[in-house]
Length: 108
Image 1 (cartoon, rainbow, N blue to C red):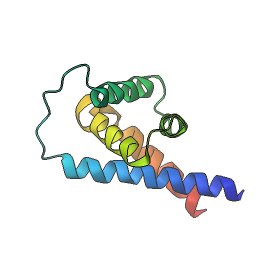
Image 2: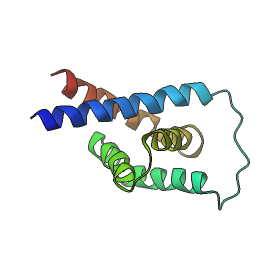
Image 3: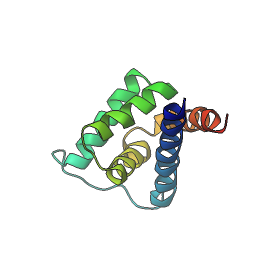
């Protein structure tokens, strides 16, 4: 049970971090990035994964997959925030639902 609580807290921190960074970059104009740019490419991958499953569990799986592949926490948060702000803003609500879901599990 303790392991699940730790995972819930970690997901909550990641999701809240994504939303906070998103709020900070809202005033930054959209970058004219080269399609080969890894950052933009990774953001597009996040959006495609959200197209397949934007449930709280799907959101957590996307984040965990990146972390498992060695993506640093800060990079995962920044890339996800970029994806939600500029590539697939239609999925912002999915992250809000996931933060709410994991936040309640952490507090329970």
